[in-house]
Length: 68
Image 1 (cartoon, rainbow, N blue to C red):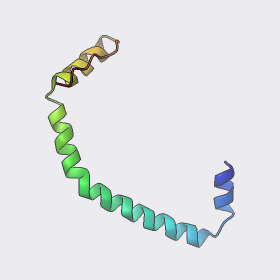
Image 2 (image 1 turned 60 degrees about the vertical axis):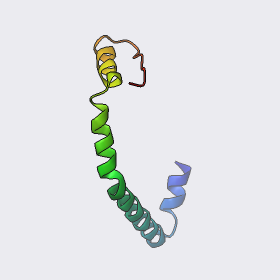
Image 3 (image 1 turned 180 degrees about the vertical axis):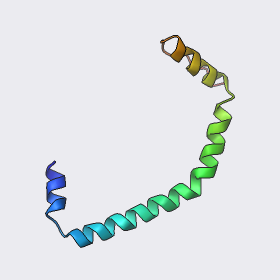
Image 4 (image 1 turned 30 degrees about the vertical axis):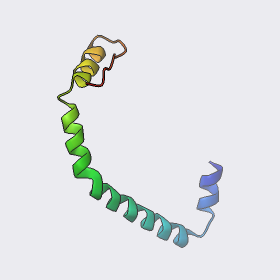
């Protein structure tokens, strides 16, 4: 809360500009890795660990992962 109050009382145009710059960098980074990230995530859907996670959730227990 203290930080929020300090920022709110600070130089709003400078803070706004910094926020725009940081968000631009974050969006560019996400665009660079999103396709790869989604492809790798899709591969995980077909693993034994994924099936174990689903089964453990249904059975309301901790999963036992094997790395497969």
